[in-house]
Length: 474
View 1 (cartoon, rainbow, N blue to C red):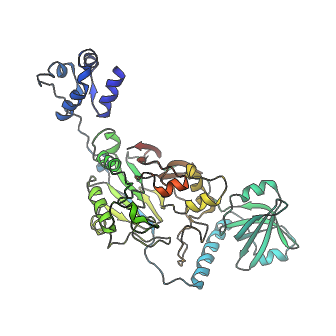
View 2 (cartoon, one colour):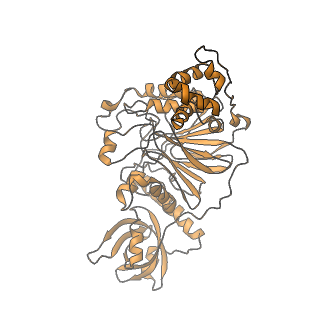
View 3 (cartoon, rainbow, N blue to C red):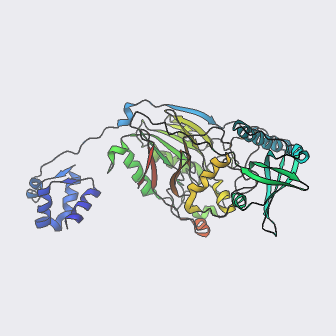
């Protein structure tokens, strides 16, 4: 009985003295609901024996709840935008695509060279009798009838068939995606480049040094999908109330300095066939306006960093410029909101964060064996291994051929934040924190068909003085 009483009181952030707990158990067990209602009404933080004795006469001892001030307000914000894509180049043509892939190739080749590898071109490798390194783009990977692996690879000087005979390297080939840039060690023999080693650009092991000396918190959310019939409004409002120091866990909420939203703020219009049938709000401007009305209730000193996703009002091809101002003008008029591109690279007090909506996770999970939506962080780690946010071209993730490959991970961040797949996950790859922030939308019909089970209302928060992530449920 005591356990039940304590659980009910804790739900409402109300404490109780030991004597009052005994008294409720003996005399007031049937009035627990009314006691809680009266305590809330009178802003009671601690129920005492005197409160209970005078309960029927409404003569109560009032102990005012502890007032929490926002601890984060004591510290100045420090935001540096290191990369945010804004300018869309001219219309794509064959030349632009060639330049785009050449830029990707040259940048990743530089990564191998910096590691001490001295590659030769494919045209040189074909003429050499020595074992050499080549940096190449993978055109195709397939298994032969004899269970060996053949890769069609090329570079700006030519193409070759790379033959993988070693069993341990065949396992490595299971993680190779078409269009990615890799390094192969081997020797040309007749018609094939016989592979003796496969090297990915990969991330070096980072040293865990970055911890702030101030007790502030960053909150990661994404995939709100306001406007959808499946939008979980009450969970989202509970999250907003928590940030306003209402309910439990006030101490944590008082430390929140930043919120990063990783795309799909609204459900959009016409994103997929028959989309309108699943919409509560069928006007995208109204979707953004209603979301702003909710987010505008946040404490004034919380800074909100926003990137778009594939449901937002901007172009579909990545990199995506920020949400178009015409559709979300309220956010642009409010200095608390920082509207950036997808992806973006920022620094908060010297902690580097790569923010990417995460659409290419669909390509990775549906292409590679051993990957699924239940282990989204495993798929996220491949971005670092391949040093690219969307290595596969021409699949579900449309990519625009800009002059510079904005999806390259040329500088290793301390944190990668993504969303898109609606499943909360936190892990670590070579001391880089990988955070997927889940959703505020219940399972859709499309997700049922794809066997995707979302985890709505589970919000990762980062204690920046500890570089530790915990997940709060709303």
